[in-house]
Length: 270
Image 1 (cartoon, rainbow, N blue to C red):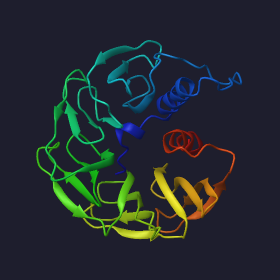
Image 2 (cartoon, rainbow, N blue to C red):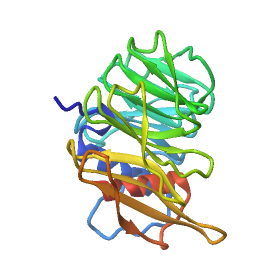
Image 3 (cartoon, rainbow, N blue to C red):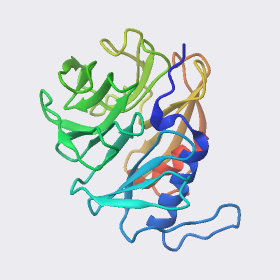
Image 4 (cartoon, rainbow, N blue to C red):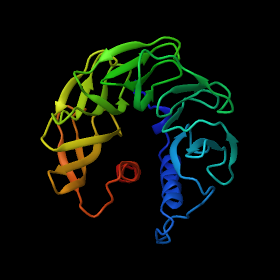
């Protein structure tokens, strides 16, 4: 049975939030009339999570968490004093977030947060299959929990720092990673994340984001490093569950700042 994680479960809501982030962070962006831009804060929106078409959360760089239950028609906010870089809710009450140096959990819809005790330092990536089972990237390691963050298992990653995850089911998962110029940028697990095998290591490809629409079809997005000449946005595609990958998109006309490009990647993958 395919598991569809809550932060990637509803395409319309997720697409809306990407466009909302773009409208806030790019004040001079043109509106071509296809989408309606909304601005809810002067702060920069840096993380988002939707659990269905209507209900979702945004975290901004001012320590404020925003919540909507009507697909963004209106928003409430709470000052949580947490500067989340990634955010994921698994249902209306339970969610997880990471800052630059800590991981947190909420059990009341984001109003209060408790810090999680992890085995070591963390990086900028997390992924939860459900309320209990999830992953947080460490320093060339992965921390896995099966009890909602109470305890964690440390998984070594052969020197790679994982940047994004997608699990097709409880056993089969794909991840993007950086590994200090070896370019082993896509990894695959068949045992629930306990062991990982590199499946894409083309030189100069730096993948940051992963997405699947079914058990076979997926995309990874990042950049191609033109040594000494900058980086070009890049998207590659698989049709066999992540075993092999082909180039489908490259452009030198898009800003390559990681945060804004990651939002662009998600729009393309819809």
